[in-house]
Length: 317
Image 1 (cartoon, rainbow, N blue to C red):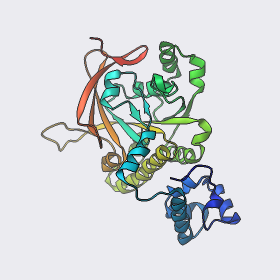
Image 2 (cartoon, rainbow, N blue to C red):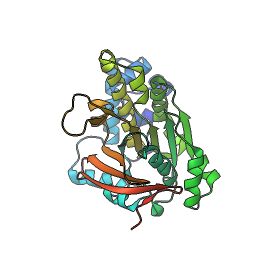
Image 3 (cartoon, rainbow, N blue to C red):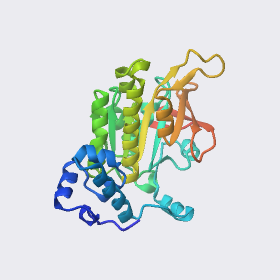
């Protein structure tokens, strides 16, 4: 890819008037146009579809986005960062921790530790790289009212971090319905750099969609909106080399007579949209069992961690 520092005016076919329309619609960088669809730009700016298509194609040409060898792609993958979960066993299972440029889905019943793990990651991302972090901030979108700053303080103290400074580096917002949730993520496509954030947490991703679009008659609309929502998060992860972590619920399937009747909410849209899918379940006392069951690189495997006052840690021998 080309070096950074290029502007919208460097894209062939963009003059002052078109640049103004694009910026007003929130397209501030060449990368944002390269990853956008022509239809999306058309709807946001009023430009013709043909013009929008020309802009996206020229933006990708300017960035050098196209075919590359697997060797070149491997070198590009060296920019991927990892956030420690707090458990060495879980980090090892994940190949280093929670990965940037990807969406990691945490699935489980109530009380299995999904939100606990999200709180831990919101603190750990602030650590320097040699301590398992990215030296960056976190954005936390709470859809169910489960975020607790008191928990952040407990985890920060255990890591010998200043609790107040730790809280200042987590940008929290409550999403009150699916429209609001979608809008927040859309705004982050433009505003992510202002927060100096490398971690986006959505806890949980499907709850609003599930309650607002009940029944099979609403399924198509729900899945279409959810699909675009997930694609927007993918764009954030790629544009800003950020990790995206979403939590999800499970639901029992009454038509399953053999095997596990529980399955994640969201169907194929969420299944195909998330890069890594992890299933959590309760173990003995404060132990949690976590299993990778869908990944482009990891084998299906599981490990155990413990939740205690200081956060997430390995099970003591």
